Image (cartoon, rainbow, N blue to C red; front, side):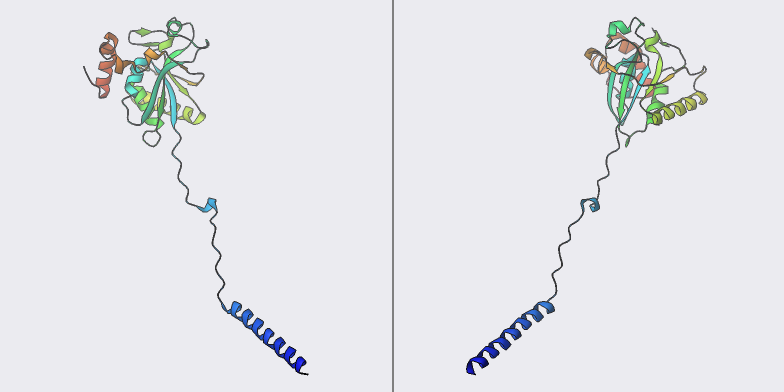
Length: 223
């Protein structure tokens, strides 16, 4: 009997203790699980606008390069050849007029600072787009006025810009600028790159480029 009472007492005590623990755990507030943020919900950094690019022919590329190097928002200007049928042409070949290439500059720009419309607005003022295959004393198909676009959107901008230039009253003759899809760009020989800045006192620079930059109101250091 004593043994039975002892066992009964221990059973009651164990049950009460267990219930008490269960009640304690139930009464305590449940810890809030940590929230793991989904990466897609994190603030996104707005990507920088994709760099713009257009390739332009406006006579001797030394002139066009010098102009665009002095325009705010232009990030890079590279002289080269485009629009011909001979692969890897040399300057000597280009000068024959038989390769079909035009002397061009590849103009890269920051769309956050300058639009393609403004890049082309400079183009119409930087040369005479009404003379076919000629700019001043530079004569030949390699000196033709040309816009080589890289996508349909740029083509539309170029066509609209040319129409506006034609209606501006600035030109007495019709514009003959070629608007063509860009083909392979061949970088010109190294001595053509940055030509005016390195050869400002060369006869051609003094006779042609200096007056052009003054006319456009662009700054340059005169030795």
